[in-house]
Image (tube, rainbow, N blue to C red; front, side, top):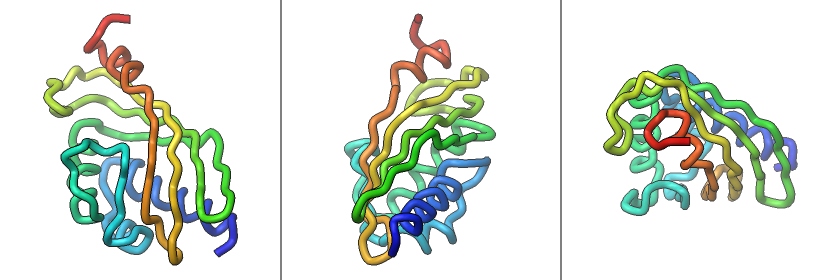
Length: 140
């Protein structure tokens, strides 16, 4: 696959998993390996796409109308790096935090590994503290 193909695959993954109000399971099945590992997911989340789907659903249940904007997208070899920003309205319990009704979001950088035409691994760094401040959970 070309670098542009790899970048397009990551954008499709982001749209399927992290945009809108629902998870596009069919697209994830097409784009991601069954043994997919997200190294930025909670440490108790086992590897594999089937374990990842409920994790993503939990975000959609906690944040209504998730938007995702890609600021930068770089590709080299079998890796794609995305600098992104996402937000939504906190309407459901989120990792033990009661709904605040506030709109908040994250900014982060994710690195994706493409193997045999599918995404097999993801590493990410996010501004979790900034999100908690936007939700009013901790003071500025």
